[in-house]
Image (cartoon, rainbow, N blue to C red; front, side, top):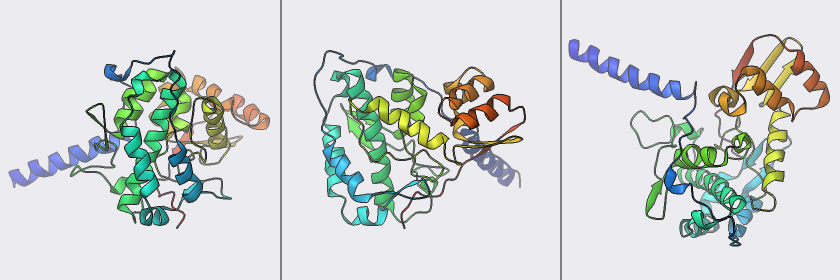
Length: 273
């Protein structure tokens, strides 16, 4: 009986650790190896294969949520596979800032799409993951660059967030879920980077899954609970940051809002099917 009790306690503890991830996301912690960049570099990364994949399998749905034809992609993954193989051959530390940031965003999104297509059909990305008590694939090693294995968490939380220190990253990387900011229909590059980051923030925050605002009720995506500190030092600062992307009438309501905030997130797959 004692052995059963101890085993059950361990399982519960592990599960609670998984749940805690979703109450506060992974910390931003720099992997110093990837911090180098060459702002004199004129090297341009070719993202055409990723753009072709987006053109063929991404659908900008009337609901405001971009959907992916994972079933079709699963049957014809060659261009996406070639793109990821190409990206694995590049040393991003030799790129300038905008090329490097675009490199990591596109790679994160391409790896996520490839992961879902390879395992399709699934109802949610949280069904995937190598660990026994895994709640998703974010710590699975998915690519090797410069003889270093990388996970999605490495790319987002140990490279993108700490190096570029830009909250708009959260509107650019996509977790293959309805509740996530849209997978952009256009590949990021050095020229369109800032425009696409702003566009991603604006489209998400003006959609009800990002912000749902009435005089006495405010519902936000759980994204802003998990990564609140990325958007400001306080809740008021966070709301001020988000307000920059809202319509004027929403900004007015947000400035005067005094109630409690509710947080929601839909982990259902952003699947066209």
